[in-house]
Length: 330
Image (cartoon, rainbow, N blue to C red; front, side, top):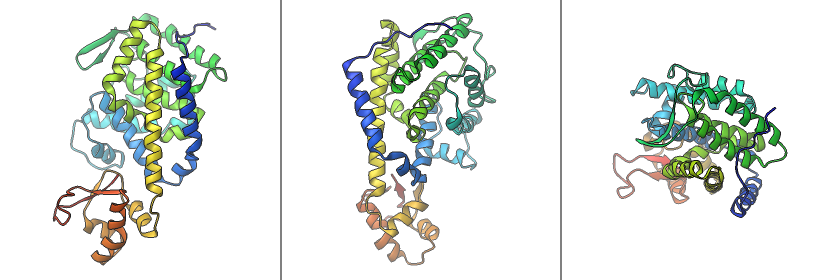
């Protein structure tokens, strides 16, 4: 077995982030809270898939991605629609993924790129580069080196279990994987999925934490960190960047949970139970979904309290009585 160790070193800022992240994960009593809120879990999974695909230039909107996952007809590029279906199937495998198995990696890549990539589930045979838009960040190792480089990386992960913090293993793996670029396509999606799988083995709540959405917000910084690591010859900059992304995303999840727990009157709970995130609903639609007949009752006991708590928003807030008004759960 190779004794290769990816080049990186632990800085004071990394140690501080490790401590902060661990504290937040522990303080979220989280898995049980998310487990009791299926809408939060489902919405976060949709956000993960949408953001990871958007980074790779998939143009489908969040609501269109949700519709594809829910089996609704969506008019759009068929390859992009297939990418959503594939990603959903791949993320559904999270709980059982063996993150130290190259065979498993290829199997999941086969799911992620089904019907969209010729070399699905197989290491690349040609030269590749990492691009941010039209800009080449760096050229990847030649294809004949890929099998050995991947073997070295996975052997390091196996040796590191119980010795290196999973947050560090996940970050180092993510960078090294992107650098090696083992597949002809789907490398970014696989790097982010595998990173999530590594974190999920440490703490299950990461199955429902959309790290990908945070990376998408800071996409340019994401590529800049990768580029700096390539120049520096180690993954330090990327480790600090990705730990910061995890820390920021945990803050958002905590905010989600707190918002969902506020004003938990029976009426508001019923309203939130029938509304999916980021989907606009008319008052008439909500009335029907709740099985109510009184518009005044809907406004007084359901919509107004939820608006006051910031749990839902109007699509036309400056014209609350507009006939085109819709309500969206946030």
